[in-house]
Length: 242
Ligand SMILES: Nc1ncnc2c1ncn2[C@@H]1O[C@H](COP(=O)(O)OP(=O)(O)OP(=O)(O)O)[C@@H](O)[C@H]1O
Ligand SMILES: [Mg+2]
Image 1 (cartoon, protein in one colour):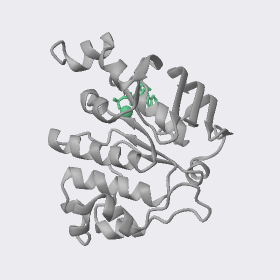
Image 2: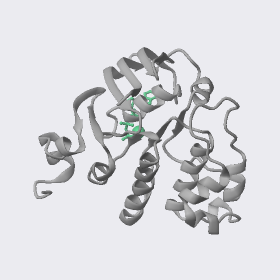
Image 3: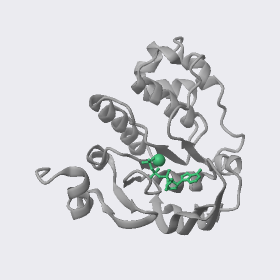
Image 4: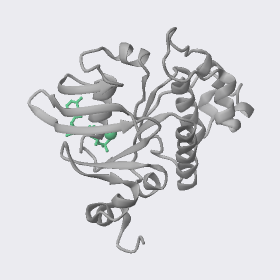
């Protein structure tokens, strides 16, 4: 498998406070890689750094390669054009606009290298949104709103789709539904880096997982390996999980 994303020795500081201290991680072509860890472990910092985003004044060093090209010094919009598309934590839809309008606002870059999704293709991925095409997003369920956010990201023609806690606030049934949609996108060839607090559900769909603690990778492996990892079992799955 080709490596699409290669993060090496990534360090991020906010002022004097160190959020990531030397993270190595990869995502292969067509792979779904999950990132787990406690609150404050550095998950959002990691994915924001990959996308070139920062909520504050972050100092970033290390290497972030996309398809062999160093992107660490490129601004977010240039990385987006190269196919690094992030759906950040929290709201990322325009609530006062309809589903359709939300999709129309995003156009793929002219020389997009990722897969293009026309609006109709997005409705193929999320059939239930077609029925709500003319509904304002404010009237949608949390799960539907998250699907709109992902649909908007697909419109930007991602090569690497990055999702930061897409299931936060959703009922357990909807968590599974959203994650299964994400898995289906990966089966279609997309590469995904997924931050997910519901580790059990993430391990159902992910190929591999990284476990972050205090800004470091403390464990990584295939979903099957991570299901047996003592730290994952004790912190997230419980002793009776098997
Ligand atoms: N903009 C910022 N300015 C200063 N410190 C920040 C900023 N963003 C994050 N941090 C700090 O960096 C560390 C990592 O935060 P981050 O948001 O990456 O964690 P996380 O794993 O995504 O947590 P959560 O599960 O709560 O989303 C934390 O100690 C946090 O307080
Ligand atoms: Mg976070």
